[in-house]
Image (tube, rainbow, N blue to C red):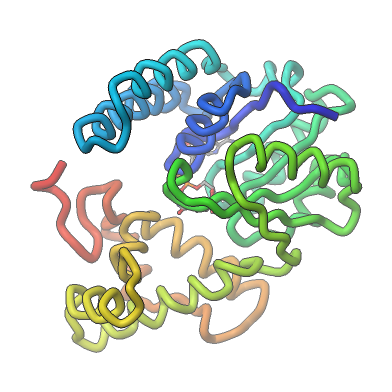
Length: 289
Ligand SMILES: NC(=O)c1ccc[n+]([C@@H]2O[C@H](COP(=O)([O-])OP(=O)(O)OC[C@H]3O[C@@H](n4cnc5c(N)ncnc54)[C@H](O)[C@@H]3O)[C@@H](O)[C@H]2O)c1
């Protein structure tokens, strides 16, 4: 089955990136969020990011015009999920909350046509369990994109126990058309990359709690590994609430103490310090915004 139209559910950091890449790679995109204003805001932020790329000379003015044309031609804003019936695939990128995701996939399972493939971008939850909630576990798969989606090359592809070969092939074709590299990952909490990444964040946060400066942790890491960002810069970029939700989910599923969120992270989220998104996390972004 060839996928031409994709509904993207969720207009947060990930939904925005997935919608942008899908539209710019020639898919028709129907974009929704519980707060449809966020989709309109997301569209305007994507346009601003195209302009920034021109200013930084990462793309030419001609590239800008081509990308803007694709975005305007291919993306339509949807209120609610009714228009999921027009989609060949729905990529869900909503808040990392198991019940919210199950409820949405149950509704999508009833609204979509029989051929439609449902996808979750969950960072940690069981694809088999989400697939069961959809009522179409054979046409359900995990595609775990990484942030920022337009930049990061890898997509983890996670088959549930009942995902069909046909669904897997259709999903791999979508990943290829989006210009990404698939890595097949097992359906275990955190898959491959987050399994490593979450323990890394938690350890770095425990160093901050012990009195080490975030700047020293990130600088040391970058100089030692040639990485572009350190753990605390990466956590701030991803969103500290998203990191906390993912740690809680993997800790709950595995009981492994290395995923038990450091209390400092929970306190920061409760204080509204979510990282770049809120203007303050391990670093202060208020002056840069
Ligand atoms: N942030 C990251 O670095 C990252 C990386 C990979 C995967 N993920 C995963 O992607 C998903 C989204 O993460 P994010 O960082 O974009 O989160 P976010 O908090 O930035 O955005 C979530 C969006 O979902 C919307 N939403 C909530 N319930 C909804 C519903 N029922 N229907 C439609 N929209 C709904 C919210 O209004 C919000 O706009 C999560 O599952 C997360 O674990 C995040």
